[in-house]
Image (tube, rainbow, N blue to C red):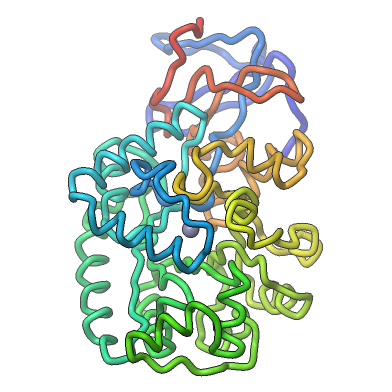
Length: 385
Ligand SMILES: [Zn+2]
């Protein structure tokens, strides 16, 4: 990803799970006792990175056919309320393992149950998990912050060098302005990474600008005041102090040129989820404009409730990326979007040995023959040599 491809290449991994050497096979020795894997007709690439998922919802694939977005969101909440805690954990484990079977070694998860932190911790996976917080009613601000701080405090005990915990104030239509500001302050004090669902639907843009539409109706039905902010969702979050260097902005479909410039000036990163945006009828995010503006952009599947599976190659197709561009976005660019490029995203000496061995030559969809995470084999296809 950061140097030309190597024919008959090899990667040597040390006992600490780091890359000790990369180069032509003939130049890389095999130290005594080293375990070797050989794949004569395959590509050895950095482990893939899914920049936006909700793996705690993996059990809900195909269970929400609601076409209208505000109702779809409400239905997800009902489905979550009907899920037992152990089912979230099982869903998280299934989601992490599904990724490994596809060569995905790192996920950026947003969730509210903590299940994915526990699953990644116990399985030895890699990821950033942004703990979600909700609270449209300013009257519940203290309660929301207390719950968030407790949850983050507990989940952080499970954090490791390959498992980070952050925060995610969910979206403009589920979070009050004071709650956004409180979360921004908490993230600053505790140096927590932040992810936000932002500028996703037209209904959200209408809600922020005019305080009308289905989200505003839902707030008023609950007795919560919705104010017109007369601006775009991106501008709204900037005013509230949420648009900072490293803030992961998920979707960003409803964005104009000013928004893109604002995101770039803030140093924010984007999780681009083209299939989810299409499935919900939100439209397409301006990927070309993001990249021209120098924004860091990774690809994300979003949840299986939206898109049915966790196939990042399908996202690359939906984004109309050619093979090489897709591979870069799924590796080094994804790592940059998550601020993790010093550790993962390319096969370079000293980086973590997160490696995928993929079949198939372009334009065919690849299959993962072997997936290695920090030097440990986490997936091996039965038919692999
Ligand atoms: Zn999402």
